[in-house]
Image (cartoon, rainbow, N blue to C red; front, side, top):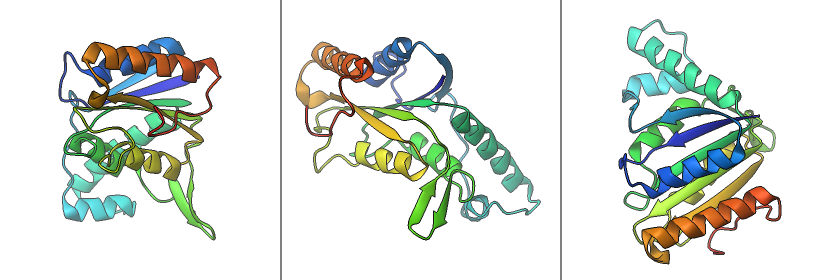
Length: 202
């Protein structure tokens, strides 16, 4: 078993999502590959390169080949994992821009998903995704939350079998209380007594 940990908080110290993703991978106790999107920012893709990247074009343009190589590397990380752990601070009701960049790099037709007679089919075969969503005040799972549900959709789209949500919403109280409650959710989820933490159910 292996774990891919993806952090995206701009706050490098004192981050609730970073504290909880580290706690989660420590509890999983498996080999961890870390991808810190705030520390290792991905290059912005031009409109031309984005279109060709998603088409897996064989164009020899240098900029496209650079993006293709990076995309292939990120997808290799993804395909090699059984569990993926996302740290997702909510910025302006959505996911951080650096996380959206990662999504644009790994969502490629014929590689991480394909379209069939019944619609899209994910190809990654990842067993579980843990989505740790933190916010300053927006309740996770509410109508104002465009982060956790969106990321769950992406996970399902690329073939993740099970998605577990960890609620680190600022609306729940002090940072200490939020972290303590989220750690309890993690412990419960990993104990096998809870199949899925339901959004809005905490």
